[in-house]
Image 1 (spheres, rainbow, N blue to C red):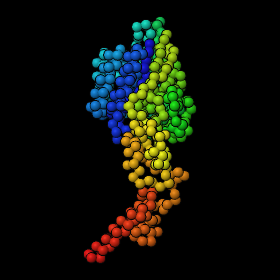
Image 2 (image 1 turned 45 degrees about the vertical axis):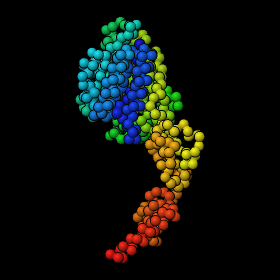
Image 3 (image 1 turned 30 degrees about the vertical axis):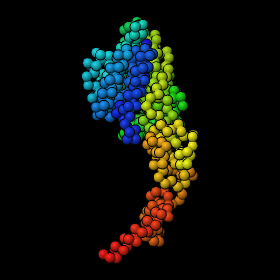
Image 4 (image 1 turned 90 degrees about the horizontal axis):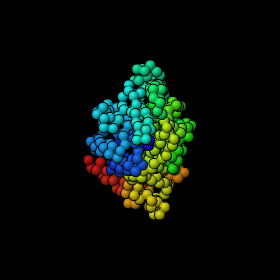
Length: 417
């Protein structure tokens, strides 16, 4: 039996104000092609199907079309809800969809009721779906600690109990697979994830970049630089299961041989520029997972993170690769170049983020404009100082002359009033 682990489609998401629906359509085309070419039996989608609880009509239409194409390609689909989804809305019609081979598992009360898969060769797997669990609500209902670790531990305890009963009642081997949407301790985060443990703010990016191959970024140790562990769940929670298909973190990574993140199929922040996007193909034989292999998808516009003085950025062949990519450009000139954004866009039309960070740090300047007010000897010095303070580059001779003319005209009008 062959399973395809994917997650975090975030259908309807935008990237620095630019819609990504066409790129998402392209990568889902590649996903369907993988299902057809490799003979995938089931697609596992571990949450954050949509980017928001009330998705756009276009996003809903794309999901509908993709699910239909996956079924036409011969795969069943098992999906759960993530912290970006509305579990109730995503789960509407789940009973009818299940009859058609699309299994939408969004109810925490039924997380120990698996989808039972069996292929033509008789290989069997019980697939359990754990939607995003809100610990403040479920901790009290389940009488466990109201933490992500507390509720996930209880969820997996219930799943293990059901799996053991099913295995005891059948002589045929049965693999136990779980989908879950959470932050596993030690995972490498990206800028595009919402912190599920601290009220929804973006997670800090891990200081170490993802592995260039995108195949094994997780080390199993907690990364330095992550502030707090309120929302993190130990990987050991999934001990005893054959495979845990995780969602939430956007970089593909291995937390343990049987616990993995597929990552998002497209990059959703510039911190993911070095990620290789794709999923995992999970081989099941004899009631166990025998192999997990990466599958890569190259779709949508790629990313480029550039940093240099404006001259090389505009002229050097070194940066030609970025001309058709989404670009984050950092200009390192000592002073902010004139018309920097406009000039850079002449070469990089898809420039989305511009920064000015001088080499060696910014020069010592008056720290506040209030201090500048006290130190300016003349009105002209005050206005040119304002330009310097806001822009990070002194006013040119022409700009100073214009400001001087404006001040003179203002004084003349005031005198004539």
